[in-house]
Amino acid sequence: MKKTHIITRKWGDHRKGKTDWTRVDALTDEDIARAVASDPDAVPVDIDWSDAVLVMPSKKKAISIRIDEDVLDFFKSQGDGYQRRMNAVLRSYMQQKVKPKKRA
Image 1 (cartoon, rainbow, N blue to C red):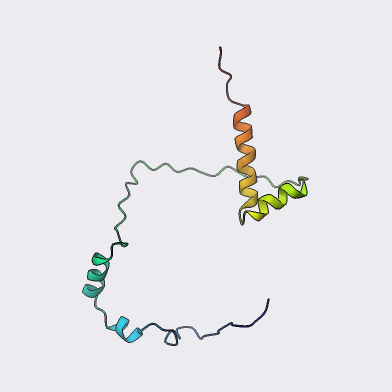
Image 2: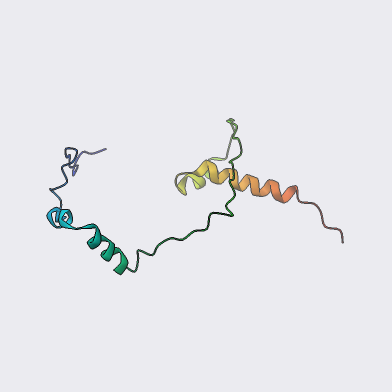
């Protein structure tokens, strides 16, 4: 990795950016509350957690498996979590196979 354009700063040294920290430091709690109240993107989140269900992830088992290179490359190209996505595809396949058959 090239080390160009890396800026090193000391902990707490935030005054070198473009932020007007003097103005920020001068804000009162009331000023901040008014700014939040007038910001349309700062909508309070009101979530009812009373019906929430805790879902424990299933236990995973480490294995060694041979996968076609192009299949592996495809999943990896989708970004982080490719093993989790591969597991989800396999789970979907498994669930389709174990469904009870409908009688005609």
